[in-house]
Image (cartoon, rainbow, N blue to C red; front, top):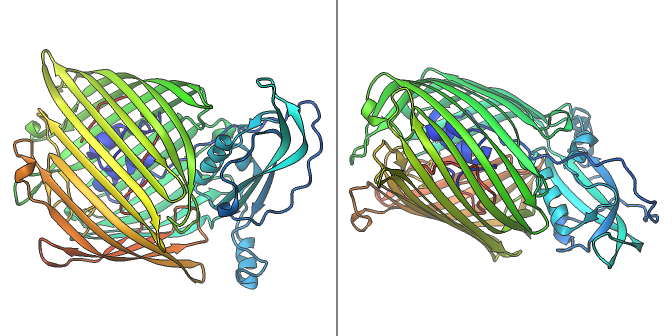
Length: 602
């Protein structure tokens, strides 16, 4: 099951322990804070190769002309049809017909290897003779986008005039082809990432190849700098194959080395690449050797560094039934942690030096809605539907571990919307039992949404996390990295957090060369407090400001965004450092998927 939380910021140790039990996007938040710019790039969810077997000869289909329609002009719902063939049109990075600069772009195109057709066909799990529905088309398009190598993806049905009866219905459906048009993004990148603000600077310079030899292999090597805890410079690298020999098994390796810590992660798995996939699994092993910083919860936060060495290993296996409407999924997971620390034994995080065995069941129903004008790269395929899950497990100590509990938890998620309005909400709750007493009780709520109005769109997020009877160390932060722009990194630390973000982004059609420019206005407000304190007596902190958004239109979807924000800190009553980042401030769409079973962590 591909993810383990509805939030993007977690304790760094929990994030490493959940490597590959969690989705890479959610895993990024926890590890990024700990080891600077050591990033776990998301792997594609790949679909099976279309079989070459042919059914009874269908009637001829009209030839497919090169479609010129943009995704915004395609129909919201296609009529179901019987698949005759998949026709793929692969296009290079630049348009040499006149929209781009023909002389320069022709030379650049000759330096780029166009994505191999087999990479695209691996996404198409439909066989000739299968029934094609809107949900299946949306799912294939979503996964093609998720590979991270295309700047544009268009799927279009081309129907024949005659029909053929289906085995499950007395109604007759037409035959048709499925046309898939892709335009590559520039895959070899001299990457520069930066994040400033909150008295912290993080920079990364790397050489990245996200589509090696046109086969979607991913490799990178680079250096990074972080001023947090005087980490300084480090080096990092990644190597990943998102679909080994078309088996949909993914493998990746990542490392990061600096004067404060050395980290390595190896992952192998086969996630649910489709709602029609009957099974999935994931495994991971990670190692960390370095300095772990603990932060006091006093009004003046102080950091204390202690040597630590951690080995984590884990895995999950699950099954799925359904696909057309409601999904039922089950999963089991096993995780192991062994940590050695030289001092401050009393400030251990939860479940250190433990073995955790969990089982869970979940139900899921989802479709997809297309939204325009909420990002520069065109349409967003946002999930709509609902999910519910329940989990139970046993956490057992070893090697001096402290926690021996029976744990139960559950969660629900709901999402809905149309082309102009979208909303997502989720609730998680779990607790452990030690004899007749509860321990490690956590409740978390998240709500987010998008409202397209005027020349742009409002986006917002609300997040609340509260713990009770939590006897171990927690370092929940409220700062520039967690979403309160203009506040010092690790300047506010506690047990519980409440945070609200609101932003209005204007997306005018301003373009210079291959860059599109927009603007934003934002307001952030939040609070942090400890278990012994009441929310009613907690001080709220807020900021507001304006920003600029710059997007490179010739790289893959979701890449190449530069965000520059100018926050006004209402506590200090002044504009603080400029926030310069290559990541969005928050996710307005949420995650509608089934999680790997496990304990909920702050």
